[in-house]
Amino acid sequence: MIILVVIAYSLLFIFEFFPLYNQKQWRDLWLTMILGLCSFTLIALLSFGVKIPSPAMPIKNVILSIFGK
Image 1 (cartoon, one colour):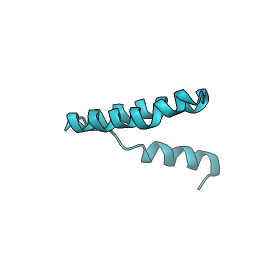
Image 2 (cartoon, helix red, strand yellow; image 1 turned 60 degrees about the horizontal axis):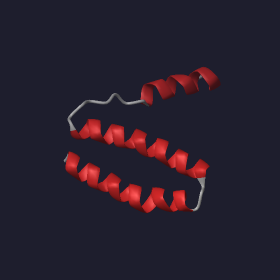
Image 3 (cartoon, one colour; image 1 turned 120 degrees about the vertical axis):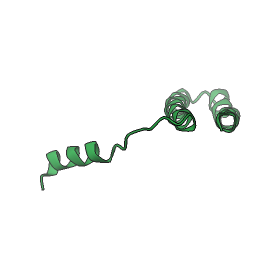
Image 4 (cartoon, one colour; image 1 turned 90 degrees about the vertical axis):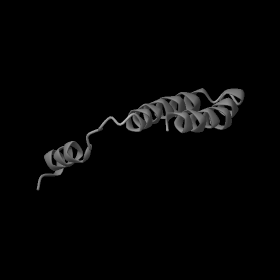
Protein backbone atom coordinates (compact mmCIF):
# COMPACT_ATOMS: atom_id res chain seq x y z
CA MET A 1 0.00 0.00 0.00
CA ILE A 2 2.82 2.40 0.82
CA ILE A 3 4.23 1.82 -2.67
CA LEU A 4 1.00 3.15 -4.20
CA VAL A 5 1.20 6.21 -1.96
CA VAL A 6 4.79 6.90 -3.00
CA ILE A 7 3.91 6.47 -6.68
CA ALA A 8 0.90 8.80 -6.36
CA TYR A 9 2.93 11.49 -4.63
CA SER A 10 5.75 11.11 -7.14
CA LEU A 11 3.25 11.87 -9.90
CA LEU A 12 1.97 14.81 -7.87
CA PHE A 13 5.52 16.07 -7.57
CA ILE A 14 6.13 15.80 -11.30
CA PHE A 15 2.86 17.31 -12.50
CA GLU A 16 2.29 19.89 -9.78
CA PHE A 17 5.60 21.07 -8.35
CA PHE A 18 7.76 21.31 -11.48
CA PRO A 19 5.39 23.65 -13.36
CA LEU A 20 5.15 25.94 -10.31
CA TYR A 21 8.94 25.94 -10.01
CA ASN A 22 9.42 26.67 -13.70
CA GLN A 23 6.89 29.53 -13.58
CA LYS A 24 8.62 30.88 -10.45
CA GLN A 25 5.41 30.94 -8.44
CA TRP A 26 7.20 30.60 -5.14
CA ARG A 27 4.26 31.25 -2.81
CA ASP A 28 2.08 28.67 -4.54
CA LEU A 29 4.98 26.22 -4.66
CA TRP A 30 5.63 26.47 -0.91
CA LEU A 31 1.96 26.21 -0.03
CA THR A 32 1.51 23.17 -2.26
CA MET A 33 4.63 21.54 -0.85
CA ILE A 34 3.55 22.08 2.77
CA LEU A 35 0.03 20.79 2.17
CA GLY A 36 1.38 17.88 0.13
CA LEU A 37 3.82 16.95 2.89
CA CYS A 38 1.05 17.07 5.52
CA SER A 39 -1.26 14.90 3.43
CA PHE A 40 1.56 12.49 2.55
CA THR A 41 2.38 12.09 6.24
CA LEU A 42 -1.25 11.34 7.12
CA ILE A 43 -1.71 8.89 4.26
CA ALA A 44 1.59 7.14 5.01
CA LEU A 45 0.58 6.73 8.66
CA LEU A 46 -2.82 5.36 7.62
CA SER A 47 -1.20 2.89 5.22
CA PHE A 48 1.00 1.62 8.08
CA GLY A 49 -2.12 1.06 10.18
CA VAL A 50 -1.65 3.91 12.65
CA LYS A 51 -4.94 5.11 14.12
CA ILE A 52 -5.32 8.86 13.69
CA PRO A 53 -7.83 10.53 16.00
CA SER A 54 -10.68 12.48 14.46
CA PRO A 55 -10.41 16.27 14.72
CA ALA A 56 -14.22 16.60 14.93
CA MET A 57 -14.47 17.11 18.70
CA PRO A 58 -11.72 19.75 18.99
CA ILE A 59 -13.23 21.64 16.04
CA LYS A 60 -16.67 21.42 17.65
CA ASN A 61 -15.27 22.71 20.95
CA VAL A 62 -13.59 25.67 19.23
CA ILE A 63 -16.77 26.58 17.37
CA LEU A 64 -18.85 26.29 20.52
CA SER A 65 -16.41 28.46 22.45
CA ILE A 66 -16.62 31.15 19.76
CA PHE A 67 -20.35 31.12 19.06
CA GLY A 68 -21.75 29.48 22.18
CA LYS A 69 -24.59 26.99 22.17
